[in-house]
Length: 276
Image 1 (cartoon, helix red, strand yellow):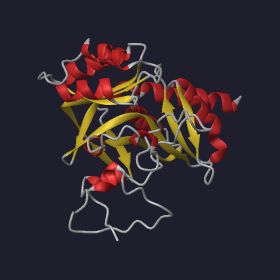
Image 2 (spheres, one colour; image 1 turned 135 degrees about the horizontal axis):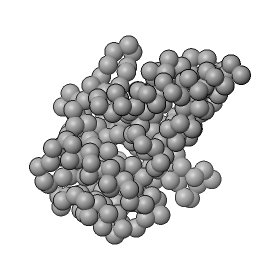
Image 3 (cartoon, helix red, strand yellow; image 1 turned 30 degrees about the vertical axis):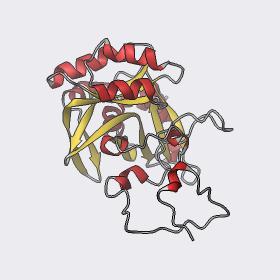
């Protein structure tokens, strides 16, 4: 009976804080400090259902936003299930947030959020956040919060079963950043942090049509239809796109590729391979 009452109280406290969080939702708690963001009024981040076609995605977006030509090309030609929207119109923050809420009502839209600005970088709010339970015996309270906010456990770390990657569903009324704050404020977690993606890094993605299959280079949790598992685990990669923000190489530097064999006639190697 006491456990039941504590779960009810926890849920009521979390629900009561929704209004205050919604009023100042673009921040998160990190190592006993608060990181705040501004909204990038020229960008937004949208995730689509995997089964939707490029034309369906294009129609859904353009029914709400006037997007730039680069975004149009990306939606129609990319094999990814997400897109960074370049918004042509000058919109205020409230209008963008309302328009994104209307866009999310479309059945093919999984996630639609404004881009955030932090220290000159533009960041995307994905549909996931990571947290660590202070006490693994409190999983029932975690389950209660998941039920309250229409969330689910996307992944549990095998090397530390108190760490979870949480996925917010389409039915979630708050985005993953807002929910990360609510979960952290419950006092149950050592940390609760949103899974933010660098838009700057995403825009340095090469036009190689097979790049999305290289989850070791950039892992967004993309579907892997030709593998025994259905999807990769977001964030488990070597952060190569972030490295490309620093440098993409120097033609004056030669790199040796020690392998069993290299196809020197491949288009990627013809102009750059060092020939013995």
